[in-house]
Image 1 (cartoon, rainbow, N blue to C red):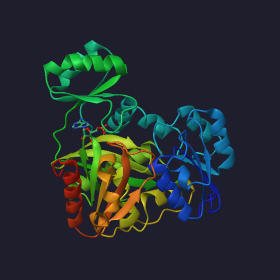
Image 2: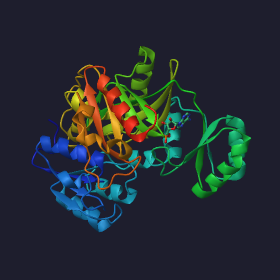
Image 3: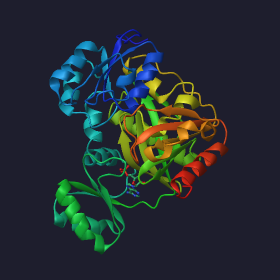
Image 4: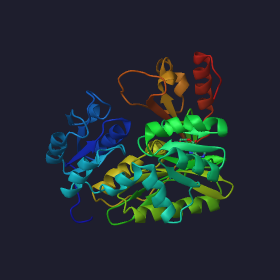
Amino acid sequence: MQRNSILPGSTIGILGGGQLGRMMATAAKHMGYRIAVLDPTPDCPAAQVADRHIEAAYDDMEAVKQLATCSDVVTYEFENVDLEAARYLEKQGLLPQGAHSLEVTQDREQEKQAMAQDGLPVPEFAIVTTEQELREAVYRIGYPCVVKTCRGGYDGKGQMMVQDGADIDEAVVFLEKANRCIVEQFVAFEKEISIVFTRSVSGEITFFPLAENEHSNHILHRTIAPARVNEKVKEKAVSAAETVAERLDLVGTFAIEMFVKQDDIYLNEMAPRPHNSGHYTIEACNVSQFEQHIRAICGLPLIPVLFHGSAEMINLLGEDIDGLLEDGSAFANAHVHIYGKDGVKPNRKMGHITIVGEKAEDLILLREKRAAMSGGSTK
Ligand code: AMP
């Protein structure tokens, strides 16, 4: 055990009260910790399982100080945490993850530059702030390309495809609204994968199996683990993760999303926290991404990861779950998670299911039911 370990019985403060905070909190509860959550939404998913809820805006410094006072250690469940709050908590010695990795991952410019500086493979890119820079970048990078806002985009929000010259005017308007954008080469990838791993305060790293991700409308639809990729790709992904972990001096669970094209990888995005594509670890591994995260931030030794063989995770969006919850047969073999969100909305992540250890024929049933209910196709 490291010196200054935060032991069970102590209180872990979480900035953010969504589903990731909820799953962190339940993992911590299983380990004997108490939980305080700071989130502006009454009865948010994490608050429902926490001992204390500070109902305030993330940048309300009085509330952040309250969280600091009642917590032995603090973490966050989303990367758009207010930097001032993160720096304050770091100064108090309460945020082992530090504010630096947040700062880098909050901004696509810093994120891509950090990766490129370390020689990691990224799609060709340029940062643009004016129409002329945009036109020059698109000319140099070529069609098709993707224009993304440097700050604040998620689940495909804040980005547009530029297929050809006809899209340039729209891209100019997009840039004017965003102020600063990244123009990226479009990678005609064969697969999207992610690597989820955890680093301890002392620099020890454990990896979860690579995950293969399918998106639908830019939102993660399905994760399959282990990813069906060759050894070269696996080695490149692990080595990239090690480089990022050292460079950012990470603590906790972290995820990197990548594109795979033949034997090559291209790093796309990083998340300084547990990730949707790592939810399968709850049932498919001896230690989940959430438990390992709690261990890391509390200064406990990490547990070697044992994977039970194969897993499939499907997100349940607002449009999926209506009616399905009353139909147990739709979830045969599945571990079902519902996040306790108030209000079912299309495209809102309401829960997920995981099937472990076998190819999930029943998921086909689930998709057929969903399609039959929506009158759509069985995507
Ligand atoms: P992001 O918000 O950067 O994670 O992008 C959301 C999704 O858009 C990714 O998961 C990809 O499916 C797609 N995408 C983003 N950037 C690129 C790119 N440079 N080339 C191809 N597809 C991309």
